[in-house]
Length: 584
Ligand SMILES: *[C@@H]1O[C@H](CO)[C@@H](O)[C@H](O)[C@H]1NC(C)=O
Ligand SMILES: *[C@@H]1O[C@H](CO)[C@@H](O)[C@H](O)[C@H]1NC(C)=O
Ligand SMILES: *[C@@H]1O[C@H](CO)[C@@H](O)[C@H](O)[C@H]1NC(C)=O
Ligand SMILES: *[C@@H]1O[C@H](CO)[C@@H](O)[C@H](O)[C@H]1NC(C)=O
Image (cartoon, rainbow, N blue to C red; front, side):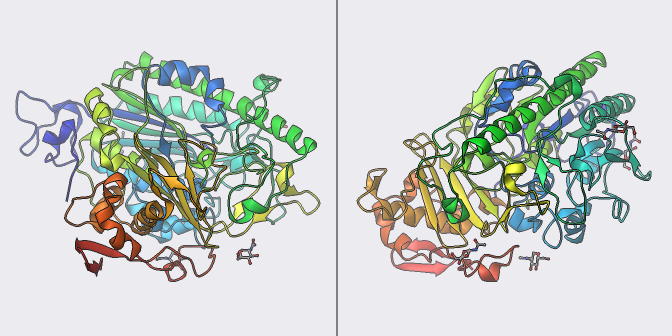
């Protein structure tokens, strides 16, 4: 088993906890070589922020203080495109099929499912505290975390918290906050500004301790706002509220009209294929909705400036990594869709990830694949903690040397994206206004994958309806030309079925992978280690082997992770020509 220990690996035998730079317990650090102080982390996670709709272009402080001072990961993906499951994957380092938190509400997701699955004992703040950190969090934690269950039990592992609670999480104004072990209170103010205040308070608190710190900062912008009538039904969602001071900004901004915006011909698969073309009044609404998102992000941009100057003021900036990301992406008008997320398409899954910190190259952009399951391993790596075997990702390189090699690393060629259940439309265009409920599309269960190298840039998906998609991003960056099943098409100089046979086998491994299998999936297919990339797997000598693999299929569209409805779970491993054995 490969283990990836970073520059601080020499200290990984140091048993935590240790206190600051003066610790001298056990065998480490050796006298005269005080252990370097572990770095601090400020982790800023917005809600539903896109990469592809250009929202970052409207955030000058994020650009100036994080991107220009750090590295932009242009091919960073969430592994499930919806809030709560994505956040759980991020805080556990596991894909959703391994957390089994796959939805935003019970029975398949939400805070109660997070507790039920035992993650409260085994996730980010618990691990970092064990490693000597003070841990703080403010803003949205997980969906279905509410006044009814906030203390039953409390989220573990935090030294200080100020959580936004449901059902007012998405109200923007006068939301319910819940601090430390205190009862929830209704706030008076704009939630992003309150979260900024809490963050500055936590930085101050953290400064007074010898221990390094982690602060999670989770404003809700630019998430849509809950329509103000909680009548017990699922509420519908309207444009986000900007702070008063930002409400007139960007009067001419419009949702970007890329090559898949409200196309003449239907595109995508499953319910997306059946959408009618959007009309002018829907498009006008969606442009104003888009502007409201940009406006709501302005308070986040100000928060970023406040946080950086507070860290600077306390002399903490030099030893602090600042992460800026989102839980999932967003679409407005792509493939004829009204505002929303939850699809495997690029707008929903390729998301912002920008990091600044000690040794992180400034003003650099990189385009190898990273994902949200890499975040936890990355924090471990930077904190000098030995990686857990059950992490499904691996540390993101953050030094000039690491960044230079990653593009050639076969573990950086793929990412899998999964989803279960239905898809919620947002905005008034996505609601049945008379009923006060959102439109919900069924059959949104799928397994998908991106595979990216110098030679190829592919998307492959299999939906629970057994529809397949294959897009060649090199020629079709907007995912408009589904190659799957097209006659006489060649890809990478080969007939399509040869390529598809490899992609299907790879996705079959990824859809149920655990631990290092998720980063080195070709090893499962080729235990001799001779194949580590798609290109190597395409060698004609493996044609018969791949042709014999079971195909991915679904028996039904289920709302949660019920493997018995998800077709073959295992394929064959290549040993000698003609002698293949099941993986089991
Ligand atoms: C944070 O919590 C940990 C674990 O309970 C504790 O050891 C540490 O002293 C706390 N830090 C502060 C500043 O109270
Ligand atoms: C928030 O609460 C204040 C004080 O109760 C009230 O004046 C204000 O109208 C509320 N704001 C919103 C948007 O409901
Ligand atoms: C889901 O897909 C099945 C099979 O393709 C179809 O019969 C059914 O109508 C779809 N259901 C919804 C809610 O779209
Ligand atoms: C995931 O959770 C659901 C709901 O609790 C449960 O029915 C299902 O069996 C779980 N799946 C797995 C693979 O454990």
